[in-house]
Structure formats: structure tokens, C-alpha cells
Image (cartoon, rainbow, N blue to C red; front, side):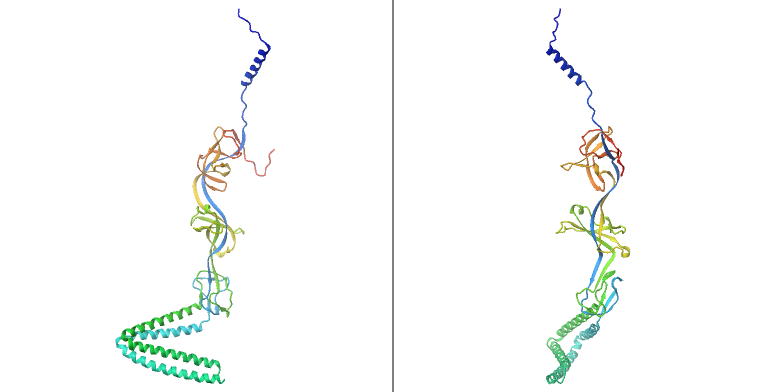
Length: 420
């Protein structure tokens, strides 16, 4: 007969504890809660990288016209606000003295041409004779003018004539003496150098006379103020009859057919732009935005701000937009067609710079997924790898969401609505 087991109180207590433990272990595990989130579907569409900046408007071209000679303004042919064409006469300066100087220089040039034409072997003898006659004639003229000057000098000292008459006599005497010296030099050149020297002398005289004539014509042309560009007269500080000073602005002309907006942007953004990229200019004063193109991307940084200057040029029909305005620029750095796009709110950036999303699988569980992003455009970001079109990603509630947790996509809250 087998021995019976005696159940002592400690043993019974141990059995009870074991039973309790066994009972607890056999109960079902606690179910994890479902997290409500908002989500969006990854899709394909065209996306653009747009760089925005604030800029200031300038005219496409500006010309500040300054006269090269000082003379009174005889006539204006354009006023402020006048539309002018390139080469159009804007003003005429008084030029009677310049016309006389040009005529005199022309005569001297024609005389030099005639002298050069006679500088041949057959004409040397005639040149010598003429040179001797010139010496005698100029000598007589110089002596006569000198005598006149000395006579007037005495009369002036006696108070019989004015200072102007004395000055005229002095100028005439000096000119006559110079003519005489030139005649002597010409004769000596013919006598000492023969044919070669005569030819060289004639060539030199011809070149000098031509230069003086061209200089006189240039000075005469400087009295005509013409527009170097097409545009609008924005400033004209003088009136007819006032003295126009050489080097002082007489007209300011702006070409407003196109405008240029200049902006300063960070080098990283400037590196994505190139000349010809499409852009828009928004005046911000109620005027409609206009389309343009990037025309300049500076190759160097601005030393004061370490930014890059960028120009956007756009047509300005009717000159409706004026320089000096502050405008907003939108420049399209690149366009990607049929790009894989997700909302930027879905992108999570770690401390190490890695980018992830919480992608919702077919089992309604959110899984942390590493993605590589491309360009950003507003609320969209290009997905280069890690996702496929049609997948859902968490846009609201992703921060702190455990990997693999079950989620329930809630409808987005209506704007201006309330929840109970």
C-alpha cells in the first residue's frame, strides 16, 4: 500500500501561489492602442524648384549725356517725358565760332593738298620761287604789323586809343611774325633738302592740316547733342540760353521698354540658377505680375553681404512699371516632370541629417522608412528613393510615433470647424 502524502500548511501555501502564477500566465496579452493620424498619398506630378527673393527695379539702360564743350544752349528739341530715338537731335549749342573755325581749317587743308600735289620734280623750281615770294611778302607784312603795333602802343600810353585797339594790333603783329617764320622755314627746307625734303614737308603740312580740319569738324559736331539710346527723357536741368558746361549732365535718358530687378541671394541658391531661367516679377502695388528671365548671375560674391547678385529682366510695355520699386522675384531654378512627390510635412529629419517618413503598410501599421529627397516646391518635396507612387505616408502625428504601431487615418479637420 503506497504511502500517503501529508499536506502541511507551508506546502499548501506554495501550491496556491503556483496555481495563481499558472493562472496569470495563461491570460491573453494586452492589445496595443490604435493611433489616429492624418496621411497623404505619394503621387507623381511636375515639380519646380522656385527661389524667391526681394529685389529693386532699375531701367534696362540709362544714359547720362554730358556735353564735351561749354556753350550756351541755343535750342532744346526734347523735354522731360519725351520719347526719343537713338541718334535723335536733343539740343543745339551755340556754334558760330566753331563753324568759322571749321571753314578756316577746311581752307588750310585744301591748300595743303594743293601744295602736296605740286611737290614733284617738275614743280620744285616753282615751289622755290613761290617760297621766296612768300618770305618777302610775309616779311613785309610782319614789319608793317610790327610798326602798327609800336605806333598804337605809343598812342595808348598817351591815352589816345583804347586797350582793345592795342590788343588787336599785338595779335595781328604776332600772327604776321609767325607767318613769316613759317615761310622762312619752308624756304630753307626746300633749299637744303631738295626734292625729298620738299615732299616730306608737304606731307607733314598736309597731315597737320587734315588733323586740324578733323578736330574742327569734331568740335562742331559736339555742339549737336544727340541721344545715344532709345528711351524717355527723365531729367533736363537747364533751359534755353543757359550755359551748358562741359562734363556736366545735360540730359538723362532711360530705356524703360524693359526693366531689370536686382536681388541678392545666398550662394547656395544662386548656384542652382543660370541665365535664361524663367522668372516672375511681382510689383506688389496692385499691378499684375510680369514674366521675365534671369539675365545675370554674378560670378563673384558681394564683399559686404557675401551674397550673389542676380538680375531678372522683363518687358515693360507702355512703361507702366517705374524704376525704384521694391518687388518680389520668383525664379524657377529647375523643373522636374513626372516626379515622385510627397508632402513636406511627412519628412522627418534626424539629428544626423537623415530623412525618413512613416509609411503606412497594407496592414495599417506605420513603418519608419528612409527616403532620399530632391527639390522642394512649396508644400511638396521630391522623393528620389524609398517610396513608390500610391503609398500613404503620415503627415500629422508622425513625430514620436513608434515603428510598427497600428494607425487609423483620420479625416483632416475642416477649416473653421469644431470637434465635440
